[in-house]
Length: 75
Image 1 (cartoon, helix red, strand yellow):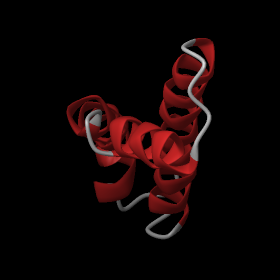
Image 2: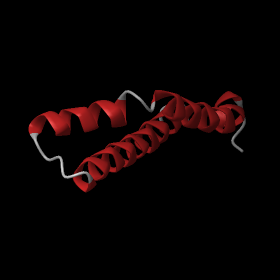
Image 3: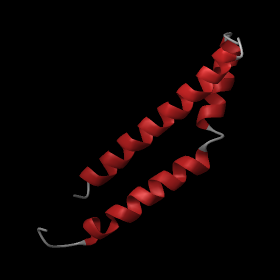
Image 4: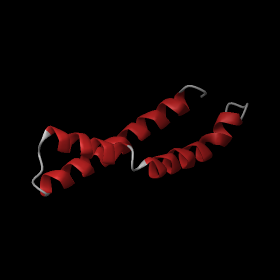
């Protein structure tokens, strides 16, 4: 369980990051901005400016998995 739970959290975190990156890029495309600099701005906005939301998602997942990770029985 010690390896499975963090791997699942990493996968979910990756999906969330991709959703924010895609949303930021689609916003840039809607504004008609499609240069490389605009892509880099969208990546910065999607990855850096949404840290709090991503951290809260991971914290909730870990809080839900904590009893399972700390238990010693088979279930």
